[in-house]
Each structure stands twice: as structure tokens, then as C-alpha cells.
Image (cartoon, rainbow, N blue to C red; front, side, top):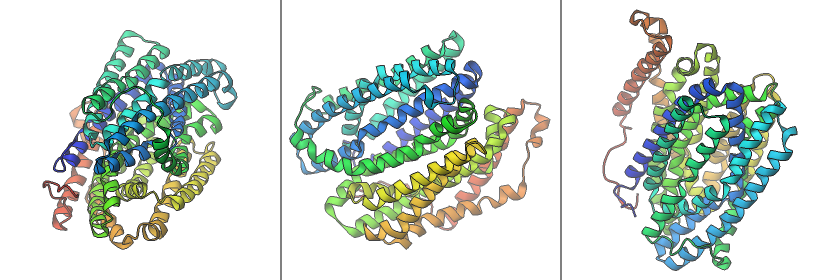
Length: 508
């Protein structure tokens, strides 16, 4: 188990490495595969992965529930219960995998009416669905071992494996373009690479005695405790995943041209998706800690923890988001060409609302650990429905914009419910202190924008270098980002909000 002194540092370091590699992969993938396969076939890959992602709802909330209970049982030294439930968890995910595969097969042979695609495009989509169904059992099986590793605070190990898999996917991109692989061949090898995670995950769990056997078991009496709690999170997961994964699905159904709309969405999504996955990793990092704090029930400890990490997360998210808010058109132009720079405004808007969304990660992990999710479930359901209606209604007017606007409304509603009701009513938290922990670094980040806006650099500034236009846009983005970052760091130091780099005590 990772020690208290290096748990956060190691977890965040390897999470950052993994996500940076993923970001590099995303930047490589979109322009290369877009140029190699064409917009239509690339859109098919996006549709297939979106539908498969939505089927992760079959998890029934177990991903959070299992980590919570494994962490708490480990704190109590109840190793035998962990073994029994972990092996039963494998049985549960085998059942989920079979259901997932059957649904994908049904979609492959009976779902053509759902999509605004040609018959030839749907035949390609069918093969992708069947490939996903083929690997369903392996992919779901890896989840059960991943939960054990995270509950044992070995998040860094899971990120090391993910980093290795990203490197393999980079190799696959090179082989695809240089070796002339077909869409089917690329998608098969991509799905296989993702499935390989089960091998090191299972090996590590056995090596560290986190599970006594990988043989499925049926200790349903002990497993019921985890499943019952997880089902209370299922509705929350249902609405969260629907709000997130429904966007490309709605675009494929309601837009005038489904594949083109989804392809545009995948371009806009690359940066926000990277930021979400990078910062979303904190939920897995925090959950074992907050689960232990719920057991101790020390209100002062909880409040100090949330204030500290809300401020740190806000600073991290601002550093990740503001450069793309300032230079969204430049980065889109550098990425896929100046003709698509109009997508920049939607990327910028998305990044603005990401800051609002992600600063609440520490408090959200406490809500999950506490198990008091009734109000959050209701609010998430209402926000999800409203966002989907907005998305569908605006699809034909602003296809990509409809997805971003709908999701922005979704997040705004949730954050308001957090501060107005949940923090006080369910968690007895000082809402004003939490809000200050968020607003102080955010306002400094906004203030740091003054100098870049005042200078107003333009891509023409780099004409004298006689370099390709895309590199000029990269330079513009880099210079603007550097100016903003220096201003932001200076303001953090002046106002004493710079996080201190020191060993973290075990109860932090």
C-alpha cells in the first residue's frame, strides 16, 4: 500500500503521465485518422465508442461502492470479507459482460433505424459493435481488479499500466497509417490493447494478496451489502453517464448529418476530455481517504481537508483550462486547420464550465463516501433531462454547440444544488468557506487574463519566421499561455494561495 506521505504525489504524478500521454495520443489520433479514414469513417468510430461507453451503466454503481467498502474493510482489518466479496464481484462482472455483449449484438443487427447514417456506414458500424461485444468479458473483468487496487491506494500502479497501453495505442496509429490497416483492423487491435489491462491488474492483486483467488465465487450474502449501497448510486450514475455519453448519440440521431456532427464533436472534445480524465482521477484518489474520514467522523478534519483540496483542485483546473479559453481558435487551427477554427468558441465555453464542474471533486467524493445521495440523484436527473432537451432542440441549429450548451446547463444546475442545499443539509459543511476556497484562485486566474488581452497578440506576429501556418498558431498559443501562467503564479504568490510542497500527513 502506498504510504500516507507519497500517496497523493505518486497518484497524481502517474495520473498526469497517463493523461498527458492520452492527450498526445488524442492530438495524434484525430488529425491522422481523420485524414486517413475520412470524416465519415472517423465519425463511425466515435458513434461506436459512445454507445459502448453508455453501456457502462451496467456497472450499477459498483465501481464507487466496491472501492468504498474495500477501503473501510481494509481499515478494520477484515481481510476475509474482502476476499469473499472480491471473488463474488468477478462473478457479478461476468454476468454484466454477457448482458453488455448481447445488447451490442442487438444494436448491431437491429439498430439501423436509430442513426442518421447511410446503409453502408451502418454496416461498418455493425462490425465495430460486434468487435466490442467480443471483448466485453475481458474489459468488464478488469474492472473488478482495478477496484481492489484503487481501494488499496495503488492508483499509481493502475496509471502506470494505462500509460503503457497508451504507448501501444500510439504504435497502433503509426502501423495503421503506414501499414494501410482497414477501419475494422484498426478497431479490433484498439479494443484488444484496451483489454490487455486485465493481465497486470489480476497479477498485481494476487501478488499483493488483495484477493485469494481469481476464481469466481458466489458469496452473495456479503456481496449484498456492497450491491445495495451501489444501487443507491446507480440512479446517480445513470444520469451522469447519460448527460455525458448522450451528446454524440443525440448528435448522431437528430443532426442533419450524424457522422459529420459527431466528428466535429470529437474534435472539440479532445481538450475538455483530457482535462476531465486528468482531474476526474482525483475522485478515485480521494475516495479511499474520504471513506476513512466518514468512519472517524471528525468534522474539523473533514472541513480542513475539503477547503485545502478544493483550493488546490481549482488552481490545477485553472492552469489546465485558461490557456485553451484564451487561445481556443489558435489551438483548433493548429490542430485540424484554420477552416475549422469556428469550433474554438465551443471549446472555450466548454472549458469555462469545466472549472465550475471540477472544483467540486473533493466534496463529491465525500458525498459518495457518506452515501447520502438522494437529493443529488433527483437534481442530477432533472439537470440531465433539461440538458438533453436543449441538446436535441438545438442540434439542427448549432450541432456541436447544442452539446456544449446542454452540458453547461447540466453542470450549472448541479453546482447550484450542491451549494444551496446538499453541502449544508446533508454534510453540514460551511458553504461560504468552500465557496471562498473556489473563488479566490478563480478570480486570480481571471485577473491574470488582463495582460494577454491587453497585449492582443496575433498569428501574423510570427510571419517573419517563415514557418507553416499551423506552427504559427502553436507559437501564438504557447506565448499567450506563458504570459497568463506567469501572471497567475505571481498572483498566487502575492496573495499566498500557492500550494506548499511538503510531506502529507497520513490523516490528510
